[in-house]
Length: 192
Image 1 (tube, one colour):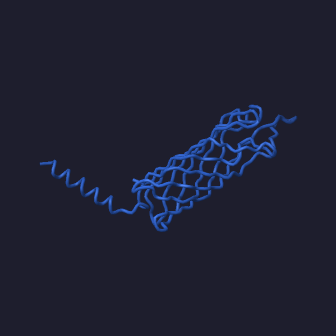
Image 2: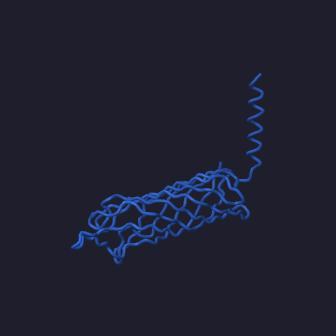
Image 3: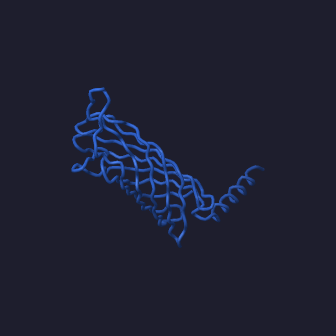
């Protein structure tokens, strides 16, 4: 007796999902990410962190605005030091559909973390930083549930590195470390 009801409920749920527009679904993004400069990239030693990945999750929108969570990690080497920063951010994403494509802008804030020996020649530096992202992108559908995403962002993150200590024992910091970065990401969005 229960089996027919289960079949009817599953059919009804499938029909509701089929009628909902793609923009009103959950989004799970995974892809490649590039940061424009290394964390220790002082003037004359700037090199992008090229090996990065990003995962993002966004809930269905309310009036075209959705809550989004991001995890981004990069791996690279600059000035003889390995750099493995990662960022955990959350915020809002506002999107609109234009034909089959959808465009969005986003504002996210959170924390960044990096390995302790990221400074030039593996010197010790701060391992935590506030981080923020402002940017946007475009999703192009590949199939009913998948889309290809390209996005570009401005990212702020500031990690300090102590160069030495002065006569009072207070640290003096390395000048010229970057805090403003350009960020590029591309990958696949699963809309469910």
